[in-house]
Length: 209
Image (cartoon, rainbow, N blue to C red):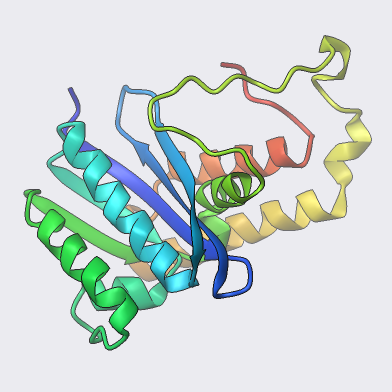
């Protein structure tokens, strides 16, 4: 069993406060990823972000993880958890304390801020949950059925402006992150996963299982 994990988390609210959801993407070397996403009722973005962190730590602990490298696109959450900002919002204090208590169960936890372009999978899962498609950690995710002839879209889809721009933004963000923080933030494997996510969501290509 791998005891080291890389985790991406996200939380969001449509209305802030409004219908909210969280998502966790946990990966370990040599093992399939664990993905979890669900709704929270009415909540703020920050409550959703902290809920994602709590669930990520609970999921990691339940699966025997001891070392975590965790990424979030919430700069507030990362700086609060790293002691750079105080938690003044009463709605976050209980979640903050719970996250700190869970963090002590691990040998090492690093939390780093990452630009949204490099957190596309967790962001996608948040929106999926809000659209009525939650994910339970560990469950098999069936591909959406489609005729085999349509599995790969026509070549012109590759030139779609949005897909192209998203892919360029992803690579630009990765290059900036490497320049600022070094090759371990993020790994090349993580960048490839983000690019695959962009291509799949844009209907260009689908990775073989």
